[in-house]
Length: 253
Length: 289
Image (cartoon, rainbow over all chains, first blue to last red; front, top):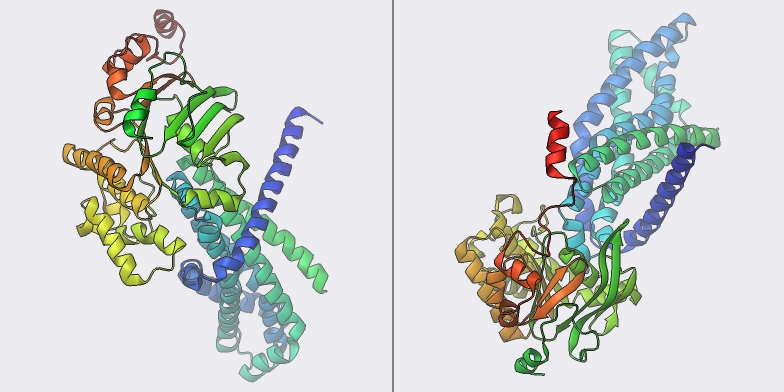
C-alpha cells in the first residue's frame, strides 16, 4: 500500500471513530435535551418548517413527472388504470424518502453545519463549555432531534403533494378515471409499504442530521474550514442516503 | 494571608517563579507544565501561582501562550507534562462532572466576548443562571439588570449581539461572566478595543469586584500601564516560561533587560519582535533578481 493510501485509510478510520464517539455522546445527550422541548421545537421550525416550500414544490413536480412517465409506459401495455398504484408505490417507498432526505441535506443540513461551524469559530461552543454547559446537549442534540423529527414529516408532505401532482397530470390532463386512480392506489398500498417509507425517512433523517451536526461541530474554525465542512455534509449525506436506500430496500423485499 | 503578606512573599526573578513557594493559599497552581502544539513547544516547564483574593496579571509578548495558559486553567486543553491545579485539584485528573463543577466556580471573559448570537443581551447574561439554577423569573430579572447596570448596558438589554460594538460585546460578556458570582474570574485581554471611558469603568469594576466580593482575578493583558494600576501581582511570560514576576512596582523597577524591554515597549532586546526569517537583504535580492 502506498503512503498516500495508508494516510487515506488512517484518516478514514480516524474520522469514523470521531463520528462514532460523537454519535454516542449525542445519543447520551438526547435524553436531557428532550427535557427542553422548546429548543427542539425551535429546531423543527428552523430545519423543517423553513424547508416546506422547497419540499412541496419538489414533491409537486416529481409527482407530475411520474404521472407523465408512468402514463407513457403503462399506455404501451394498455394498463393506464394502474397509474395510481405505480405512482403511490414509487413515491411512498422510494422517491418520497430519498428525495426529501436529499433536499433536506441540501437545504437544512448545510444550514446546520454552517451555523454550528460559525458557533465554533466565534468561540460560542467554547464559552458554553467553560460555563459548564455541555454544547452537545445544548446545541447538537436539539438540532439532531429536530432533523430526526422533521424529515419523516417532510417526507409525508412530499409524498402527499407528489400524489396530488401525479393525479393532476394523469386524471386532469391525460384522462385517467378519477375513481380508478385513487381506488387502485388505495388497494395496492399495503401497511408494509408505508412502514418501508417511514423507516427509510427516519433512518435518513437520523443520518443526515448526524452528519450535518458532526461536520459543523468538528469543522475547522475558519471561513474555508466551514465551507469545506458544508460541502462534506452534502456529499456524505447524499452518498449515505443512496447507499442506505439500497440496503433498506433489500431488507424490506 | 493578607495582601501585604502576598507582596512581601513576591520577589522578582529573572528565571522562573519559585516552585517551592507557599501554595497553601493558591487557588490556581501551575507546576512544571510542558505543552506543545504539534512540534512547536508553547510551555517548557511553566510554574505559576495565583493566590486567593488577588488580582494576578499575566503579561507577555504575542504568541507566548497567554491564552493557552487560560485554556489549561479552564481544562479546555491538558498539559503534556506537569500539573495544573485549580482549587487544589489537578484539572487533568477530574471527571467531566467534576470539571463542570469546577468551571461553575469560574467566570471567563473571552477576548471576542463569545456571546451567543441567537440570544439578545438580556438572555445572554441570563443564560448561565437559567442553565444552572431554578431561580424564579423575577429574581433572574433583577440579577441580570443589576449586572447590566454594573457594565453600563442596562439600556441595551434588548439588542442582539450583532448590533453591539466590540467594546459593548465585551462588557456584556463581563456581565455574563459575573452573573453567577464566581470565585475566580479570568479575563482574556479585557481592555482591547475599549474607549477610554469604558476602559476606566472596566478597570474600576475589576478592582471593585476583587475588593468587595473577594474574587480571585487572573487578567491576561498587553496593557502594561492599565494593568499596573489594579494588579496585585504580575507574571511576565516569554519563551514558554515565566521570565519575571512581582508586584507592578517591582517589575517597573526591575533591571532585567527582558522586563525593561516589555515595560517600555522597546523593539530591541531579548524578546524578538521579528519572527525568525532569512537575511532581509538577501531575500530582497532574491525577489528582485
